[in-house]
Image 1 (cartoon, rainbow, N blue to C red):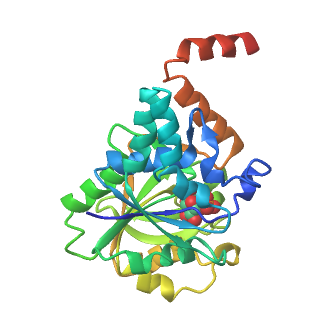
Image 2: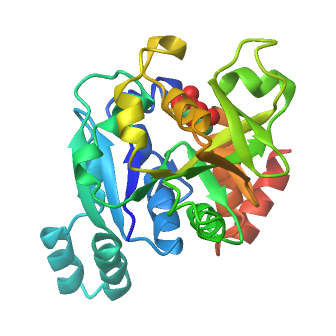
Length: 285
Ligand code: G1P
């Protein structure tokens, strides 16, 4: 079974002040912390091992998926069995390992921190800011792609892509793709105007060969002065070992205020409270 690295060490500056004392991954989208949506997607993809890359002040993330004996005892005593089941379910959802990123040197560096915990040929990686709703869970889409194209045998990987507008190209890692083969020919992190004509952005889901770690170790600081995962992916692409799969589904950018609100409304409108939410929204217009 492939583990999934979930980088969660960043300061969350885009979410300040909400993320000053609370990890941004624990901010609530409707009724659950953001990171729970990502972990649930891991489970829906048929996987059950996550590796959190965390930093100081982020222990709430591990606690959320750990056993809380005291809380369970209180819920049991007060006969709140539905809540008890929910709380127990969280601690059984996945097996959790975590590792600290002591210096914030970039996403590529964060992923590299988990190298010693990955013993399989391939691993998944999911970024917490990207929430995805799709008929088939997005990591599963990548694994299915990898199995169909026999990427496991070729030491190759696949990244999830989506089309973005020209004005948004500079916010993402952008891939140039051969549409016939699905092979990625080049990746650029946060390209400047004119640097690429592609509008295919990397969404935060990856299924990568273990050899990416060696490529990341060789990376110098890239965009924003950070060790970028995208630069490691580009090195993989130069060996002809990176593929792109265009997302079949919807993606929310939980790191952006409007994206966060959009996701909140999306899940609220799919919850048992939906009629009340619709009524509130009408009244506010
Ligand atoms: C990160 C990656 C970028 C990717 C994006 C997706 O950027 O570096 O390649 O396109 O996530 O959300 P960040 O959002 O951390 O700036």
